Length: 202
Image (cartoon, rainbow, N blue to C red; front, side, top):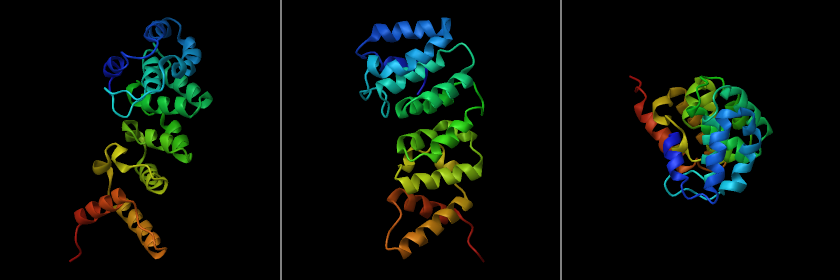
């Protein structure tokens, strides 16, 4: 999603005047975001956005607030994440790929992946996860399998999945089979695809 598409999807929020004013204020007074960011859920609602599948109004509004900052994006993202509740942290994670911060937000991904909140884990594996080193990314994918996060939300999954991930999934599948359990269907499908793509031994 782009800021323009999120803005269009927010046309029907309960208090559009508040959102318009907030988006004008942040560029002129960046510190105001620390008060406006938490208020977005109450003022814009938390309903799903029909024109932005997978997004809620508070998510989209908070992402727009972050993208409207004139500078110091990484510092504000870190501050809002550290002091935010789960919904606010998820919005920060979803904003990262839209911010001009390079890899500066990677520590936030590591923190989110360590949590047991599946919403944060899923948000951390979005497009910004391209900045995760391969080993950390593979562990994050395994965390999705363990915690039940659907793999179809992992950005660039097929492009980044490799033989090492196949080996890790294979070992997990063997452990679960020995315990009378199976991998989730999407993980089994991924393992099958990766195994089929591996070079066969002579």
